[in-house]
Length: 606
Image (cartoon, rainbow, N blue to C red; front, side, top):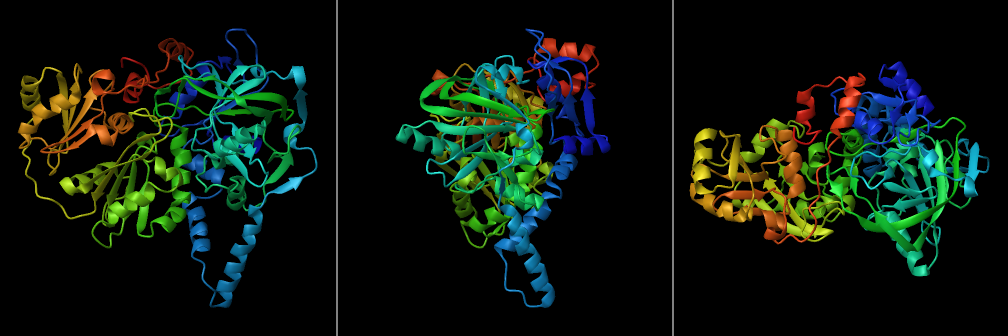
């Protein structure tokens, strides 16, 4: 971490905040706003404090390590596409036919030696300070509370190292960890994750599960924790492949789990398979608070650290955030592996305002009728891709997938009723739109065909809104997009008093001027802000219940409750505290204007 910060400082991209700031809200709010800038800085808070007790933490806080595409490239050591090409070469390696090819192939194969971790018997840099027994106090670490309604303070970038019951498999995962006492954490590993599978083994055996949590060190360690590798592959091997050198691991003090020797802080302990506590709520990367649920308790035995450690944390909430750049690396590096499942896949992209698992755009080379829908099913059956809710497929001649206006127009020009495939499958545990946890609707769209004929004749927004209001009084506002395309989009704001389906039925008679209608709540939405509308819509729809392909095509992205047959608790948006924002403004700690705050819906009511 120290070397990384020195490098970022040399690039003029390290912002050091020496003013004392509270670990509750102030530090994370400042990081949350900084990372949304076009060219954000890595932040180093040298004087974190506990505003309630006045305690001054001796450990500085690092945030926004993945501060933009350029700094993320520094972390990877090269462009992610270059790493992907190395993986692609290994996947499609052929016998060399010339001396040059033999030498090149030998060099690449020799590099694979760096994948395997090396274990040292010496003490790690992360073990210069050892705290055990009654001296363990997690509240001496500058753990952050990000949002006002969070259930407590959470470690947000903890590298969680675990192993299977028989010791044959190791895993590195990235899970949020709520601090509930001086020596207890709650382990939020979701039911689909590898560490949760290991936990099931210990639970069945009635044994406590050893866990070591590392914080800091090379930021690439943290990235590896979220890498979507197949079950049974130790993620730290990916670190060795990218770095081109063997990861050096050291044994934990109290268990047989090995962690990187140069991380900043290590929390060791064990999870009791029979002890659970309520965890949350927590404002997560979906931009919503996740509800309180029971998760396993980890009893901490030992904390070790460097003599001068850094505490690395990330902030999650509404996009764009640090995970935009972490996800960019994942997306590019794992393209060759995804192609092994879908050979005719050319490229794919997961926009950050689709919070990754909610929306994927894919460019393919269709070979026969139904090919796109075949690949949709392949996506939904592969590892973490199985969490994707909405997948849109385009042909090879489509604009770049990151050209959002261009790719949207291309899609709209090719949609017809049989373009849609609605299915059912697993969804992320954080998904709130499904009518039952963990299982919900999937929407696949095949936009690989030829352009369709334009039959809809839109009218101006003011005229159309007047007509719609006459049909239903719940309609409050309207904004149309791409009205010159064959499939224009009408975003309709509603003050909902009944199921939106009833409003949709009344609009079906306007098929000469409407094609795609998207319903959102009037409160909390700006119909002139397409970036945040994509975030809202992809979060809020379950395709099985909320997508209607009839005379017109409807999407219900409003919040749901009993009148919709929705029996779960619909979550609240995350918002920054207005008091904290005003305090940071007065102290001159950030320079964004009110338009910026409104654009990303940072405070409630804006």
